[in-house]
Length: 295
Image (cartoon, rainbow, N blue to C red; front, top):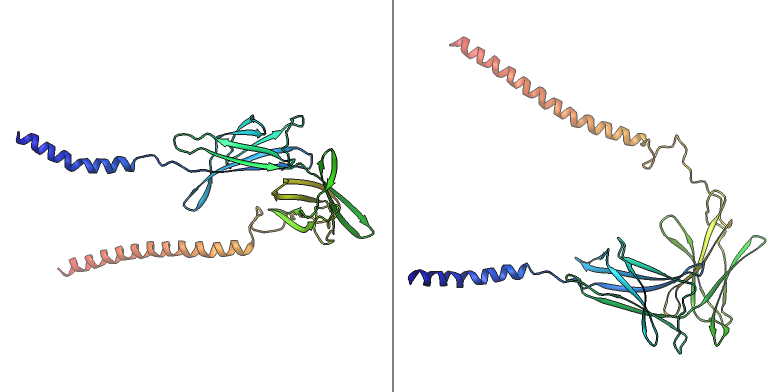
């Protein structure tokens, strides 16, 4: 009887400990961030892109290998494709040219993307509405003046109507990012122009790519036109074989000299310590011999 009472008391004492342990072992459910974007490139290809990420320690991390469902939204919600997210948490789907998209009364196309979720990640969905726009970029050169002209039109009731008041940005690709050349606002005729800088470097032949785009536009999404032509300054980026730099196979001389001095100092200290140990041992033996001789 006493043993049963003791076991019961021990169980009551240990129960809260096990409860805390089991509670700490529960799986943490991730609340993802899902974003749907619309892209229309210079070849008029229309792409839906969904990015699936989550926040951890104030860092935005991707969720790869997750299945994303893409829908067109009209009178009824219709599944058009599914795709897996890549290592960056991005899933893409290209709308075929013969895909019939039903526009609403306001002329907008509606799309949505969904992630069903699993045991460790919550479900999520994102929706966008966009209007189809025809973006043109005309590049002209008169004498030494190079001009970029952009035009934008939408269709309403079967006729084209100019887009006014919207911003079109002009970029030139550089090594790591896009360099913004200008930010244009379309006038009532749906047109805007800017003079292209004459001091931008191109490749060895002077080729440079010019990009005009609606960027994260609330109505049109991301739409771009790009063209490559010889409007840049010819620049030769090749490095001579004899050139020494941090990015070449042969290191700069100053780096070789500095490293040699540092290594010589380090190994010199090792050698000095080794010689000192040997001398100490020799002196100790001599001292022992003297002590024995005195005895």
